[in-house]
Length: 211
Ligand code: GAR
Image 1 (cartoon, helix red, strand yellow):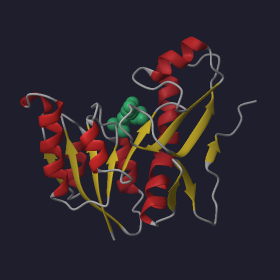
Image 2: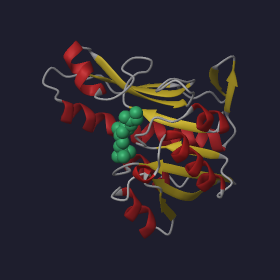
Image 3: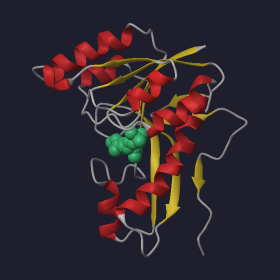
């Protein structure tokens, strides 16, 4: 059994997808938010999952907040920490403490469009393919070894709302899959790249073509 702590900042739909996937061998021990109003907290609590709030506004700076967060997380003896819409820049000491057991989902085909407003920027650039990425977290924001990506064709009439809504469906497929692979010990980090043990599944999911 692998202990998993999920960190959220808002609605927590990716957290819900991971919980709902009922991954064999995964013990979701806690959902922690940095915002007291994070909607996902109530959803988790209703399902009997331990929840906690660590309000970043109450801390003097990133180091102090991340130190308190580390203490809180480590109380659950986690094998894996899952960032699910956790909208905080993390300190290097936090990231290094969880090296190899801290994963994130980002709504772009990394290394493109790190940071915020990914769909807005991709649409402004006129990209024809957009995507989302699950990756191990390293100290550099939205970087780190890629575990799984999904790609979608961008439609001529796509808006930020329509693209993010279709992308969220893909996120909800690939994030539980990546967690499943971790729990099954199928992810191997070799020279900074992720290899998935056999039987090798498709590492990249391309949504059905729209043509
Ligand atoms: C998701 O789209 C996720 O990819 C994104 O925030 C959203 C959270 O939604 N994460 C980032 O932008 C991280 N840089 P959720 O709270 O419903 O899972």
